[in-house]
Length: 448
Image (spheres, rainbow, N blue to C red):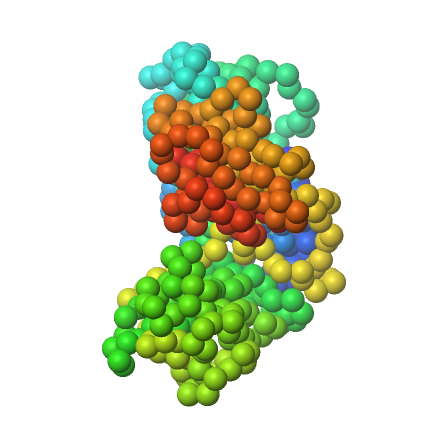
């Protein structure tokens, strides 16, 4: 296997041999370091290479090599597999958000263009990216090296190389990219990729580390999450895995478990992780919530508990380690958005205070953050928009986020096309932590 040397800002941990038994302690160390800047851990030997992406105290994604290609894997599979990796070497890199996101795009997305450097005019390709005002990632790969160029709205904003050279500020990332590529192509041809789909995702079993959790991290991720089986008259309808910090149950479609029946309140109940367990809470519902036949306001759940909401039964189950593969179940996996998975006010050893408490919007395609520090923030195509959205297929919609006391309210003020929050069409909504706002192909996450 040819090991891919990924681009990086600096090396936090020089290559070293390690015992897989040390891995929990190493991951904990870099979970804390990632609160200051993203971290990429590499674990490899002559036959396999893992790349672990960590940010804001959260294990986000793991890619594993398959020859010249990479695929994502579940965190539980990674923790299981890394302990069986013979004679591993570990390295830790520090990245910035743009590099971190660009690497995820390279590893996750299919390129719009894939061609040998011998068959493409790079100057012409970059001219096209600028003329069409692309937000894109271009990669140039040789067997063991990778160079990335990032475009934002037609402007080259950063170039990253993986050859270990000392980085110096560059006023022209495009020229830096061309010099790097042409220097190598004088010897060997490179694979050139162009990515314009910049939406990235996380590992499917991402979950928050509960405050006060003191056990091994590997055990935490190797444990199967609880699940809820929704039944009507004893007949199973759907199975949900509780992979997030909290799920809500109610009639509205914005609930994690939506039950469209008049016997169910709009926001009826919630199930939230608490320490090493899960708590059921009634949210002031009209008909109440029953646990094993008795009404409850709040209660700790145990394996086999039966929750009754309206005409429906919800069976709470804690899977055992010897059960079959969960993918064989008829289920919907609940995976919150990236920051929703961040550890909630972790224990002091893992906590780092936020630099700012100003609410903001995170643009998912580029990981840009926009503070909502004024009374009104305008999102749209217009020149007076505070947050500009563009692209040929972006609808002509203007949206405002207005401050009302301690609340921030999303309002559609112009345009015939729809705006949605958490998948539901809306013209006005009081925003809550981790609400997903969709405007055309653009997605924003509200951070309170």
